[in-house]
Image 1 (cartoon, rainbow, N blue to C red):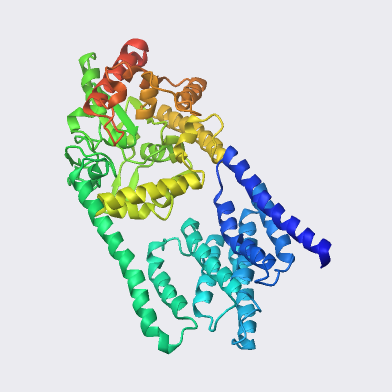
Image 2 (cartoon, helix red, strand yellow):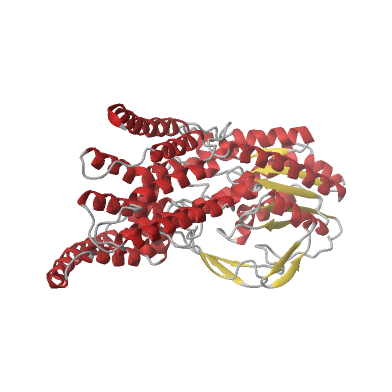
Length: 591
């Protein structure tokens, strides 16, 4: 290439490093570091090490085509246009440098080079095929494994510089597996691959070692392997002991419940939120249709005003005794100011959004375990339907894609998250602490420090703004459909905005959360209801007036649902809204 060629090659390689830094700074300042950029850097790191060793004379200079390939990959990640293909290009660069295609050492036969070339071609073809079918995540994991395995089992000794590149490629590839969250191996996070790592480490140690040296090598290997393992095990045991002696948040984590769930006549014991703070257990006895309520006849009694309360886990209310629930308190409060008998019926199930609530009102529910049907709520001939709206997750519940992303976030935000849950299940508090901190570090590294649900309180959501816009559109449409179905059966509809802990703290004068407008979701629902003439009550500003409202008196610590006090005051405020602040109850009673 000559002198100018060497300079051009060096400038191009240095420009790539500047490009990585620039893209990283830009992403960090806008939406946080993207997973694709991290994977690309992991893939191409061995290539840059190979270039450094080439300038030192320990390796032949890599082909300039790989610089062009890497530049295209960086442009794709930076522009977020072809991010998956960008990482696939990076994986090709990794294979070219990590497996050292066509450059086996002197003792390796020529056929090995041809086999290596063929394997690389097939592997990249597999990448292209899987990327075309939408399963590129799995392809990346497969490709990233190849340098590690190749380095372990390709026979013979290698020149020192090439060996460094190979082994560095293998280590980078294996570490990058922890970031590949989706695809063919998504059910096999990093720790199950540890046996492969151990076998590979042994193979690496014995490559090119004569039989005469193996006994000494084995002893050294045992000492080097066993000593740190013993020290780590001792530290782990001391950590678990300390977390049982010293009070800490992790020792209060627990798994939620036991018994049957929504099975008629069965018992259910709630022992606290999933990974929430410890609290006294609450026993629930499901009624004849599997609700946390008393039994109700389908035929409405004469001279009775019926109120149907529809919502999610707040209405389900397994956290508190039956007579403390919102709908039971509401029934008692309305009966005290009415000349007619009042009957409140609860249709509440954890995780419901407006799609499920509309179906429960108009179509009923078909359950497979056990096989039974729950009649449509409107078949109870309610005079008033109270529709719960919970800003914290209802809008997300109304989008299938946001629901899927939230599930991934909760269970597989990083490879450490499932092991955090396992550690909690087996009461390994120190292990849970380590996995939790590792999960938080990986989330910050990927730019996902804020949970997905905060998008409902952002004017322009930082993550998936188009999905949030679609979710709000569907929410508005579903509220309209619920109103039409309710009116068709001669009933009034009222929307009550329930409170979350964060919204209550904000309404109580707590410190603002940067970037979030916590009243925003309730205000948007107010606008939706105002356009349709639906009465709406916001509970957060009213509950915030209670002494200590933002400090756990209204919401269960670590759980988020209402305490008995929260249910009682919410019901009292709803009674006041229906009977004194609006004429809703007057119209319902007159009808």
